[in-house]
Length: 128
Image 1 (cartoon, rainbow, N blue to C red):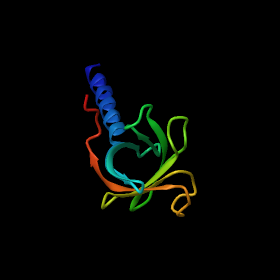
Image 2 (image 1 turned 180 degrees about the vertical axis):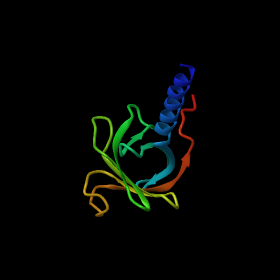
Image 3 (image 1 turned 60 degrees about the vertical axis):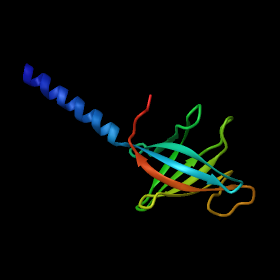
């Protein structure tokens, strides 16, 4: 009986750690084409569900994640509180390029605001 309990406990611990490993946190210092000031944005990427959350906003802005060999592409739809936006982050250099506005992205659409920055992977946890 004790052995069965240990197996169940070990299975639970392994599943919990796998769920945490499926999410990564990326912190980016971003600047827009209309402002020279820099701001920090933090994203939680769920690599299994292919979803992303901008946890810098209240409420959290949820979006879609696409993964390629070299890039993470983040797509956020417009909400009543947030503009639609897109970000492409190089997985090797951390360089972020993106747009604030409406699709299609990466086509230099008039009216969209360009964003650029540098991102790094940080420990996926709340500070407080």
